[in-house]
Image (cartoon, rainbow, N blue to C red; front, side):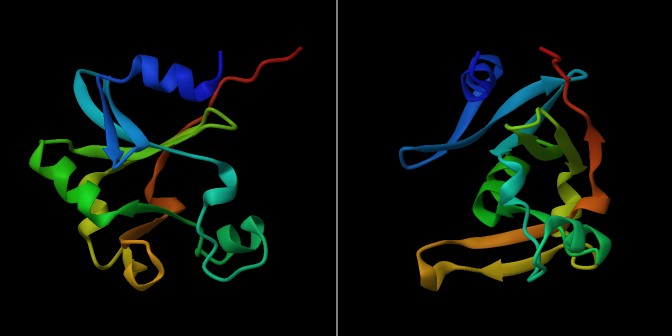
Length: 135
């Protein structure tokens, strides 16, 4: 099954902006968790040429839309993260980490058709490795 279809099927609710679906709210350990759907290539590298360099220099981060984070906090979601569609890995962090200025950075892409984003470095996430299938 395609990973996005699986993600949609398992979600309690989907988070959409316009017609685009960005992720879903899932139940994990009895609590609601938001997982944004991303690919490994979408890790923010902070100007570094490679993901390895970005990780080594503590610049590798996952970005989340500020408005989405505020909406999730209002809904009582305490854990947010990223479901990496090409590896099935899940990166989880407390939502408060995205609002902590000592850990997360903000960048505004509103002038380029984007939105205000919050970036949390990978070292602030707990990682649940995906399953490996050998064919």
